[in-house]
Image 1 (cartoon, helix red, strand yellow):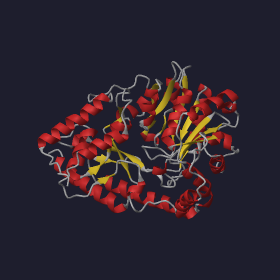
Image 2 (cartoon, helix red, strand yellow; image 1 turned 60 degrees about the vertical axis):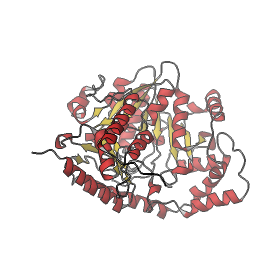
Image 3 (cartoon, helix red, strand yellow; image 1 turned 180 degrees about the vertical axis):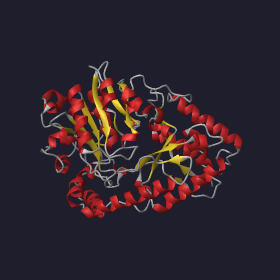
Image 4 (tube, one colour; image 1 turned 90 degrees about the vertical axis):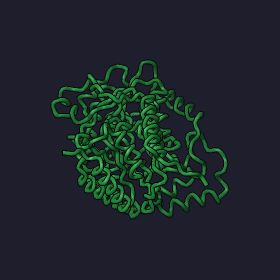
Length: 458
């Protein structure tokens, strides 16, 4: 039996140093970060600069899994408390979230048919591409065809494909802050310059379109939006998406729409796909089965050219995309073969139950967070599976930043949150609420005890 390591103060100090060393190698400064000089006057006037302290934009090698792995290593194994991780957006870790029986049966039948043990076409099985095109077309004013769809190994591979297709010498891309760090990582590997625009917390995390216009130049190839939002839990209105499309058209750039949380909206605003505005501006839609069907481990995603005007249908463009897919490994053939049945036969009641569970857990999460003085939930989530929580360090005695907060919380309470530094906002936290209510209640009860021990003495 493996001997459990006891976390002595010296071990904890060494572990914290190791953690910080990792962050430094990722380009994260532990000093006060300078504000991006291109932040617009309007953003400064409405307080965005004071509310959002960005990390050094050279943090191009941070990964969520890397940081969470280090936090997990520092949980005290001798503590009898059950580990509760609200750091990773994987709802399958909790028994209240599970996929539909149709999905399971479709995969089993595909395997037992003995027809899908060989290689699939590199762009995906024809029936899979057709099923995804029909599924996405339900919400669009035009019809996608199977030629518009390329099957990927999860949405992460779709991100890599999108950036690979857009890279050229001197090019830059506009990414949201806070955002999903895989975009920065992929950009770094592609030598694609990253320029960040802020999401405005006081405006329900809407895109600062003035900043987008100030940042863009003739070398800008695209801007990225995540809707429903990760890490903020926001959902964009039709009107805001329309403004994004008009801005991108004016700047002559395309929009990469990361919709991996598509349809997981439970607030006042319904989910509207960016592809609705494909006639205004070319859109690359990225998505997957992962979140809506609760099967992130199946790695079934898509890269879709939502472009009724046909820019992506030019022979040279299509050929380049196909050639790139020739060097990729897509999802397992039997998973692809199951997709048509999964999409066609999943009943609406399954989706409604998932939405109900997410709404319930997000409400509990925000209520309990606002009972803890040092953290607040300024914007109640409207969708996805995570929310950004603001950390007030002035109320804490011996904690200097979000990283130390998360590190000590993991050590002392066996509770894991993701430091905001990982997604671009220093001294914030990303909390995932895709968990059962009891786990959320217990995690935040422990966090409250943690606060009481570390509260600044008056």
